[in-house]
Image 1: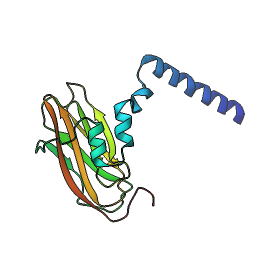
Image 2 (image 1 turned 135 degrees about the horizontal axis):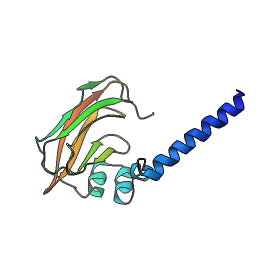
Image 3 (image 1 turned 90 degrees about the horizontal axis):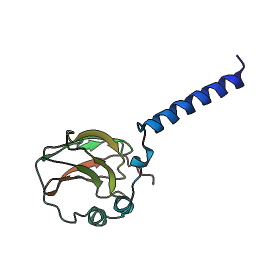
Length: 156
């Protein structure tokens, strides 16, 4: 088979599969984009501004938010963390890093029947507090853990 024909068939097949997945609603790229007030929160330059944009300027602390993150991260470009919320009715979890240029690192929304737990890797420019804001039925709560970073991961 000719290389150009092979590339054409490959691209056509991939495009058709992607079209079917989009049409079936399996892939929804719009859900990955921040919109409205979330966009403002992701663009905030301070922790206080991010919490304000999320609608929770001074949430109380909770031991029901479990943050599993290393005390010392060797590389700030990929700091592993695992988050679990034991708060009943948790519908959204936001991860914030105090001293990052943009503190809101990520945010997940959960359906009512889903266990609010996930693992991810975040960037940290320097040693800082990692805060987790959990929004549940009846309010919002926060928990924090300090992380020492040996090599920063946000450029610079």
